[in-house]
Image (tube, rainbow, N blue to C red; front, side, top):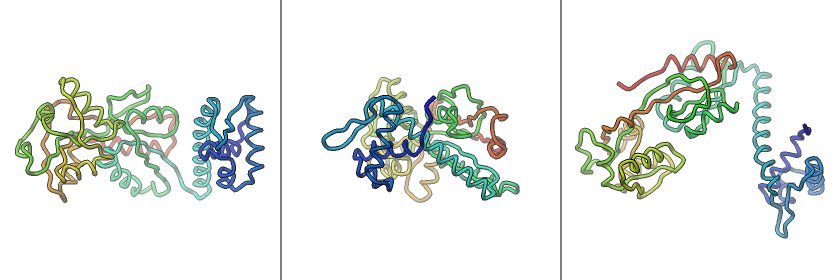
Amino acid sequence: MKDLDLTSLRFFVAVCEERNLSRAADRCAVAPSVMSKRMSALEAQWETPLLLRQRHGMAPTPAGEALLLHARTLLQYAQRLQADIRDQARGIGGHVRILATASNIAQGLVRDIAEFLNTAGHENIRVDLEEAISPDIPKRVNAGESSLGIAWDQVNMHELVTTPYFQDELAMVTPKNHPLAARGTVTYAETLEWEHVGLPVTSMIYRIATREAARLGKPWNPRIVMANHEVAMRAVVAGLAIALAPRDIATEFSRIHPLAIIPLKDTWAKRQFIICHHPKSQLGPASNALLNFLQARSRTLN
C-alpha cells in the first residue's frame, strides 16, 4: 500500500479545482515550483499521469479524477479527526454527527437536539447536524461519515440498525382563494388539474410527486421549481401554483402567510422516518446518549 501524503493531496485538489498551477500555489501559500515538484512526485508515486498539461491550464486525467474523489474524502476525514482531537484537548466530552433531511430538521429535530444538549450531563457534548437527502443518508452512515442518520423508511438502509423516529403527513398547500381551499380532503389525482410548484429532482417530494403522477397515468410538469419548502410556499402565496409539502411545515408557514392546507386521502401521504445507525456497541457514549434520547422522543401522527 502506498503511503499517503495529505499535503500533496491537498495541493492536488487545489490544482484540479483551480485548473492552474500558479493559482493553486497562491491558494496554498507556496511557490509554484514547490507545487510543480509535489505534482511530479505524486505522479511518480502512483506511476501514472494524474494531470493533463494543457495550453490554458491543467485538468485531471481519468486516473486523476479517481484520485480527486478519494482525496477530497480523505481530507474531509482528516479535518474531522483534527477537530475531534482539538475537542478532546479542550475537554469536550463527546462529538456526534447526525445527517437528516430538510423535513426532519424543520419538523422538530433541532428542538429535540436542543433539549438533549440542555439536559444535565450533556454539557460537554457537541452535535454537528448536516442536511442530506434520504437515499444518501444510510449510505453515508454506513460509510462512517456520520454516527446517526434520519431518513424516510422507504430507502435502502444498507443493513443498518433502524428504529422509528417520527411520522409526518404530506398535504396540498394552496392560496386561500384557490378552488381546492374549501375542501376538507383531496386526492392527489384531483390536484393534478392544477399546476404545481416543484422541488429539486434530488428531493423525496419530487420523487413521490413524479412516481404517483406516473402511476395515475398523468403528466407532472411543475410550473416552477424551488430550492426548498419555504420558497415553494412563497410561490404558492404569490399565486403561481399549488404545492405538495409536509403538513407541519405548511402549518408553521401559514401562521404568517395566507395559505390553505388540504390533507391528502392517499395512504402514501403518511411517511415514516427512522433513525439508522450501526449497532450500539459500535457507537461512542455521546452517540448512544443522543440515540437513546431521540428514541424516547419518537412520535407518531394523531
